[in-house]
Image (cartoon, rainbow, N blue to C red; front, side, top):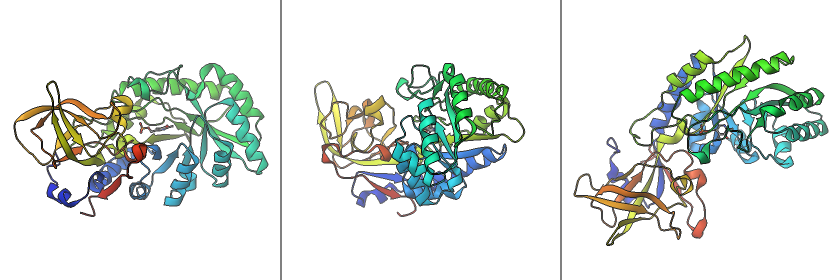
Length: 384
Ligand SMILES: *Cc1c(COP(=O)(O)O)cnc(C)c1O
């Protein structure tokens, strides 16, 4: 529960809206930055998780770089003032237009996901008389043990270059005069809570690094991506255990002198810093089910509809009361527009304010206009 918040503050604000706790975000960022500094690790924040500029300004201020997956995100990072030389650009389908834009902005590194993309990037860089720094995104075939819709590092996934294509990839790199090969990149999935997965990743990274070094390449950058999960069941004051996470890489990754280790964290940095605040429109008590119909739905927070994601739901208006099981649904004309089934809540009434917790990552950024809904607004703890 938002124990330390005076929730009466929400009563006069039109719902639904994202409520950002910028103090918690600051604590999370500082904690991560300090833990990473112990090992001189480099952090790029994955804008994909949340590209709200208020948050980006805070994130930039702790010195992190940016991890982008579209030209739009690269542009946003530059606009907010991230150092161009701390911006990396990944993505399995970068268009020529996007590549050209990123070349013009002199970003730090393209994380390249196919041999054909290497060829196109080399050609486009040559046309501009530039040299593009590249890292190869390798698919390491490591199981992230996360939801199948958010795993990315297995042979059957579309991401990265598969190990059997690496000899051809090495040839292309050698033949590409306008590419500077600086390292290898991995990102095996999201919402990873079992840290052993990262031990397995380290073992694979060491193997691939040795393979490239044996071929005469020097790797300046080992980029191990992101994916560190958060505890959706216990959202209160929760800061992920960055110290334990970074220690795994310090213990298991072989880092040569002069080599840099880079990370791309999204969810772990912003996930707990927001809640979706919404009001009960209607209560429908049926024979088999009781429904709470909220004024927020999958158009505001899509994760439950998209991959059955769990979010803790709280009635902020009724602290205690008779417990009732409800299906908590939104107003959208889709049966999957449901935040939780058979969720126990105090007996709820029209007008009650609900919080859907841990909504800082992959929340606001996935909002859609479906059903021609109004754009979702944001409110910051520093404002109210
Ligand atoms: C999405 C993404 C990330 C961040 O993932 P999180 O699970 O939010 O930490 C990092 N790197 C790449 C390439 C991504 O696509």
